[in-house]
Image (cartoon, rainbow, N blue to C red; front, top):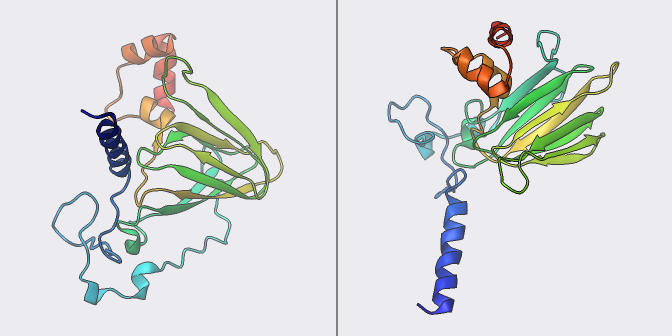
Length: 222
């Protein structure tokens, strides 16, 4: 095989793998989600285009208004606008979230299995970061930064990340854009210690190198 042919095949394989690694690209102007359809697909069936109207692309989300963080154990409130709230997002590969942080509140370590996130601080200060995967030469590196109003930070798809308001007397607000109509979220502590049914404490005690009593106490919190 000629070198040029091999390089072409490798390049096509690369861009193909990137194309299928996120939400599929639309094949028409829009595909408004028909959430009442009994047909099950990866995403949502398209609503009849003749039945689509401007309200399918609109939501009075009131994202300019503060959210209540007092009922959250971690001191934050995430208002997500994805395809479930805005049917016009179907197949467009994007969603949005407003995140309110109480003083010393946090959006705890979590991942988005289907999306990269770009975060903009609207008010206050945030300490943010993400941890890399288990790679031989740079395993579990932390990339962290203190952000102020107007600053932007990116969290790569699938990596564990967090945001924390380090200020004890002022709240913070951020706006996040995510590269999926349905990015998903896995909060690490909830998933590990609050799964249903629970993960065996023998497994978790070995994984975290602690006594089973400690694991039992942690599971009881969730």
